[in-house]
Image (cartoon, rainbow, N blue to C red; front, side, top):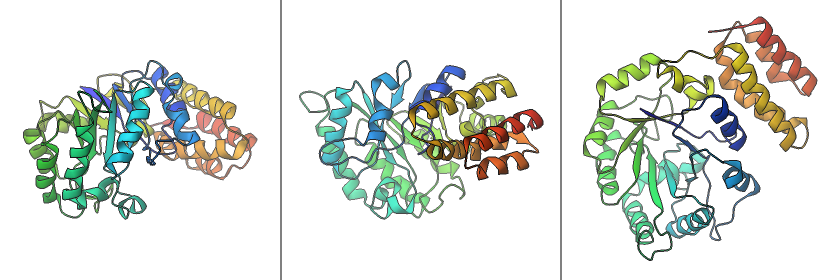
Length: 318
């Protein structure tokens, strides 16, 4: 089984990616938080830092683009190709209202005709003498916007083009992250997709993974997001490994924290980033309510570090 690390904006940047890869190896692909392309293919400072080859050495990193404009996609993909990237992922899964109202992310699924035309233009630039050359395009998708049955038509569109891979989160945009998981539609996609299929959605425990493998014994790739943010060694446990002890988790935390302090100006942005991480990783600790509350309220590094020390000293992992 291949394991992919799904992106989480604000958390899974290159610093988190490098530390995770060094301490908990075994992820086949890390996907970047989405890049929203502009007409000139320029990257923001954050985006550029995240995709620089020097910041991703030895890590299989796949940039993810969020757009419904084929020329913006092509222009940005050319720039990424110049940096050495050979695969780009199109985000058709983000359910955020601010994204969907602009018909991007999963909102683009509401316009199947325009989606088809988008792929036709993008793939005309791939292969041969096209501007994208041998660039490979993968897609992360939801089933549709309102009804899961929208997926039948959407998959027909995907099957018209030589996608490298189709990552399916079997919910609709309206389901967001807590609605029903439509495993019957994922089964349809796994059977009828012309390209390899990857599963994404709600893999948090060994029981979740065993149930998935029992239903889909031929499945050979899974993307995990929140599960890996809670437990950075989840993918290793799913392959028979053990849960990391507090020492390993402390090393993971300290390396990320120290790197942020080196790269970011001032305590406030560092603490903001660490609090985002603790919103997930804090779930690993029993009886951690008091120190985690102190972490959330910390405004100075001294208070934050004392709360982290208390958590690791007094609380046990689940």
